[in-house]
Length: 119
Image (cartoon, rainbow, N blue to C red):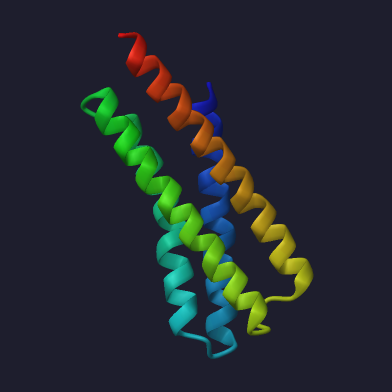
């Protein structure tokens, strides 16, 4: 069930990141915008890959990549705010969504690891 929630939330977050990218490019910011686009859209792609994992270990690995990509995206959002490409309101909204995705992924990984130990 939580895997369906993360699928939806990571996709919605990716849409927000794509829209942020469009805004940043219109402001002539090309370097950080590409970084946040890459990492922010990679989260959901890896979540989808995890759903088709070949084993529990593979699932945990793919979700771990999603976790790292989420954390990287949060870094780029912080940097964009610190360099005034994002307003405080934009940052807070995007960061909150990113943190929520990160917490879900961490919870899924912990549950998967605990289930792996039981088998």
